[in-house]
Image (cartoon, rainbow, N blue to C red):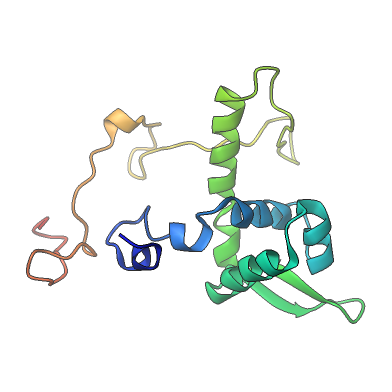
Length: 161
């Protein structure tokens, strides 16, 4: 399957790769959550080429993850996360949790503290019904309403087809 065709794949993990499936886009997002808003600040922080940076920012704007607007103070423009963009934060924290558990032998390089107490922020997989924490072995994927059946008609959530 070609990269451009991924956007049409009936897979909720594959489709987002078209938007943020490369390292630069994830690093741009990480910088957004750290408060970076100006093009030159992204460029300085990441050491990415200007063309590639502009491409990643444009893609994030195209997908309503960032919005570009005039800064409140000054004449420059800035990039701000949209609500859709803010919804990506748990993904970045999940990547961070995985890294800290498997690739940081000396411990976490950065701690993400809850501002209102001494706790740390972590991502948890839990059931939306009972609230119990889950492992991959306790999750059973099944067809959803957006999965086309063999005739090309969307599957019915009620029949599970």
